[in-house]
Every structure is written in structure tokens, then in C-alpha cells.
Amino acid sequence: MTFGCQMNVHDAAWLDRALVARGHARHPVLLGPGEELSPQVLAGADCVILHTCSVREKPEQKVYSLLGRLAAYFRANPRAFCAVGGCVAQQVGPELWRRFPFVRLVFGGDSLPEAPEALERLLAHPRLRISLLDFSESWRPREDHLEAAPPSPQAFVTIMVGCDNWCSYCIVPSVRGPQRSRPFADILDECRRLVDAGAREITLLGQNVNAYGLDLGPGASSFAELLRAVARLPGLVRLRFTTSHPKDLDEAVIAAFGEESTLAPMLHLPVQSGSDRVLEAMGRRYTVAHYHKLIDALRAARPDMAFSTDFIVGFPGETEADFQETLDLIRQVRYASAFSFCYTDRPGTKASAMLEKIDPAQSLDRLARLQALQQEISESRLETFVGHTVEVLLEGPARRQDTAGLVLTGRDAWNRVVNVHDPEGLIRARQDRSFSGMMVPVRIDAALKHSLAGKAAGATW
Image 1 (tube, rainbow, N blue to C red):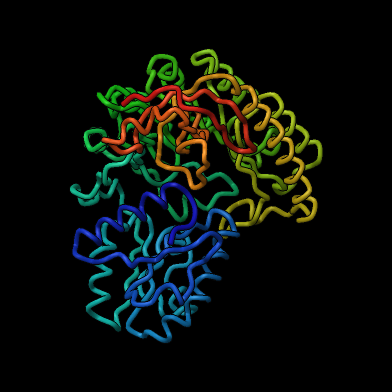
Image 2: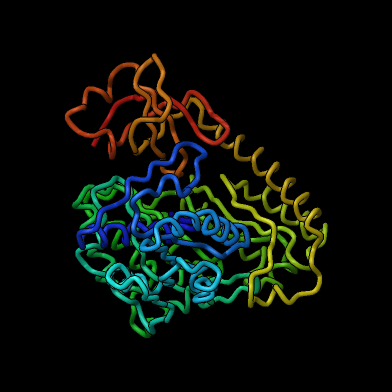
């Protein structure tokens, strides 16, 4: 089970493939809507692997809650065990063994390549416990033949791990380690193999992708050079990347948006606050004015550019005036979407020692106001696409079908979910191949709360 960011999802998928390649079988856990992992659905499992997140307090607490619920299964099956990976494992380490004796492996994201062998040792030696929590000095390669995922229209490629920024609220440098960039040639080779296997869209992953290569020394390729090389791979339709730090977004990357049509016109650019005073306390190392210049430059390079972002409300010392500046920024930029959270102390961070903590009720009130404003803007932006035609990369049949024709789901260039109706049979006519990966022009006829809906106007490969 996986908690947290896309990098955790990607790591979990890699470990799953690695274990299957070594002859292990996946347990057929099928969870219904709203159903949680429980002892009842684990019957027969020898090992349960949790990929965890501790960037905020809530997902960390969810991990402890889940482990508590699973204890009954391990008491009834003493040879079975649990492995905990990711940020909570890196943060808490062997302390998990004391709280949950059935946890026999703890491993950080940097030690993922060693996890398959460790799991096999644990299966062979029931009394053994293993801790894999050391950071390497450089990128730690994984088994090459497992890097490329099975054919899929969307693929994710890790280009770096760790972070050197040490924002005052963030635990990532402690649990992910210092920045380590992956070799340029290895990234390009994996992307090429993914496209050859059927991927049409690739997302490059890293804690701070804009800083790619800075740790490799003089002469190393920059992130902009990597972007252009991947964007020009024959057969690739869309290229995305996440996450970006505004202080490292440079002119070369901005120019690439205007010159490489494969680069999707949607960028996640976390701002965290609209107040310079709060940004300084956060250790973000940019100002609101600088952030606005980036937005303006990106829109000048690519007029159809849209943005998503992150906000933290209730940061220590945040005043109502600071919060109003954040709301002003939202109105000015008009984000397509935003991830927003109340501040919570994370162990060992500078912000956790700050004294001017905000009352939780006040933080929740601010969060509600911010989310209401953003929802209004998001819905308004969606409405502007009614009557227009967008290119949708299909992912497969939608969960809900109707009697007017096949309904499929996919995403447009701005990463919005689009429900595609096919009343004329334009897509069904191509049933000689899977719907997944098909590019379909869709005329939008409805804007929903978080998505769009329309009718297929044709189909291409």
C-alpha cells in the first residue's frame, strides 16, 4: 500500500516489478470504493509492504493507524511480516520494530534497490530484521531490466532524488537525503525504451527537478538540456515534470516551453505563501515579485500556459494580512488547481521550534477560505473550455457508462480529466487496438466540478 507523492507511487511500482521478476506472486488484494486494507483481505500474504509519507503529520499518522489495524493478521500468521519503506521508515527507523514487532524491514527511498534481496532474506530467515536507511553519495542505480514499466500511455521516470533546500518547514532533506542526480544517458535511455514500449506521455520526477545536474559538477547537462532531449524522442506526445522550486526555474527551461511543442502547457510551481515575510521565514529564497516574473515569462513563452501550486496556511507567525496576500496571489495568477494544507510541525525542522504557532481553528478557517476561492476559480476556468475542442489522451473506459454510447476517460494537455462520449462510434471503430493510448479530439460540452465532458470528434494514433 502506498501513501504520499508520485515518487512513492513510482518506487512502489518498481519494487512490485522487481519482486515479480524474481518469481514472487502479487497477492490479489481487491479493495472496493471506500474500503481500507484490513486483516480480512490479506489472507495468505507472506509480506505486506507499505510505502510511506511523513511530509505532513496526517499521512504519517495514517501509517501508524494502519499498522495497528493489521496487527491481528500478523498475530494469527506469525511467519508473515511487514516491510515499511519511504519517509516514515527513514524518519522513525528501527523504532518501528519496538512499536510493531511484526515489522521486520525498514528501508528508505535511497535503499530501494536493496529491498528485493532483503525481502528474500527475511522470507528465508524468520527471526531476522533488516534496516536499510543509509544515504549514498551519488545516484544508486536500480536493476536496468526493470526500469521500464509495462506498456502504458503514461509513464514516470525518476531523474533525481533528495533535496538540498532545507526549507524551514520541510522534512524531505532529512528523509530523502541530499540531492543526487541520475546520469543523463540513463534517463534518456529509459525514456526511449518507454516510448518504444507504448508510452505516449512521460513525467520526469524529482524533489526539485529544476536543480537537476547541479550536484554533478562542472560540464554536467542542465535540466533544460535534459528536457529538450526527452521532448524530441520520436513517438512521444507529451512531456511533463514535477516538482519545481521557483528559485531554480531558469530562462532556459522557460524558453523550452515556447520551443518544444511536446512540453505540456501545465506546470506545477509551488509557491506556499503570497507573503514575502512568510516566504522568508519558510526559507524559500524567492519573493512574490520574483514568482510573478516567472509566471509572466512562462505565459509570454506559452500563452496557453496554466499552473497548479501548493499552499501552506497557518505557518508560525502568519497574520491575517499575510493570509490576505496569499488570497491576492490566487486571484492574480488564477491557478487551475492548488494543493493546500494547514501547517503542522515536522520533527527536526526549524519551523517546529518557532514560537508563534497559529491556533488550529484559525488555520482551518483560513484553509476553508482559501479552498473556497480556489474552487471558484477552478470551476470558472473549466467553464471557459465549453464549446472548444481539446486533444485527449485516453486511459480507458470510464467507471460510469450511459446508454448514449461508450464513455471513456483521459486527460488533456492541461492534465484535466475529460470524460469522452462516443455516440457516433468513432472510437469503437478502432477496436482492433486498445483504447488506452489513443489521442482523441473531443468537443467539450460540459464543465463539471473537477473535470470536463464532451463528445469524440475523431480518433488518431
